[in-house]
Image (tube, rainbow, N blue to C red; front, side, top):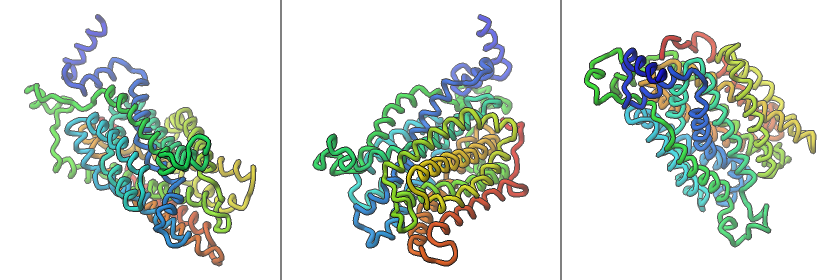
Length: 478
């Protein structure tokens, strides 16, 4: 009875409506001041589904391109691999703003469900690819139709009270980061199963004829389960169409109608939002190029400066990275953000990344247990630093806009970031192929040049986290 009384009081005070899903979430946040663990668990699972297919192909992409017989020389494989790696992000760059606008108008839930269905279909088709162009097409369609991340970033901030938004963004970054390392781990362990597990998979079986299907199929099966979770997600968008009083009241929450032209115009003039997106894009360009280069570098032969790893070795390294990232983001990042703020955490992450990447070419000179120990530690640290930077910039973006524009704002962020991420694999693959051909150069031979240029991108991103490049959002925006 007391709880009902509080709810009715809040309904009168803030003009909430019982039949509005957004109002129910607002009422829940005011009556329950704790962490919304159930909603954050849903967020974690759905974002993991969206992240797993993005980089799951990198450990076996070198071998997939080789099997397509499109590269005339071994050194050219990285060039073609870069285009397949970029196709997903190029597709997402073209449609993310559209998905954000749809999520603002029709709700987060329909976009999330449609994106999950897209993962199931097109990720499976990618595993069945028999040609270079089929691989590019299926990755492009997957990126175009999977508009999950932008709405989920808005969703995580909307189901949390302001004091827990850092945790919500940390959950997003943690799940995303784990997906970006567990996905390649699955790809590394499970690709070419007929060669690795001949007692289980014969060369004439489905997985023998399609050696890269198994990791893709498992991710798609997981996505089918995630569809059930998507159905449990409560909507967070306000819908007051049946209340004439609300439509005429500018003070009511969520009363602003969606007008794409004026919304886009105001968002593009929002410098705290745009400045954080610019910095975010530069760091994402670095991270995507690194993800492509790391896997190519790890499996390339030692004569070309690589580690001569198998896909299983790469999977093992990335699996350890995912475990370390999970521990850091859940237990250390929220404390660091409260004490230092998201901007300072991002700056520290960028500063520490530079000497770390400079050490990679020298780690490649090692062998045996020492090599495995150091490359695992370096990979864990690199992923922890990258996700720390990303989480801080996520927070700034969501705090820069009001709820009714958050989907579109995240759509703009996703489109811009995807464009930079599309450049990352293509540029990274071409850069890697070029570096493979200059092993005896006088200045920064071989892979030293690759990691030097990655560091230059990181330095640019670091500069963009300082004034006047970065503007902090108004704390009064809700």
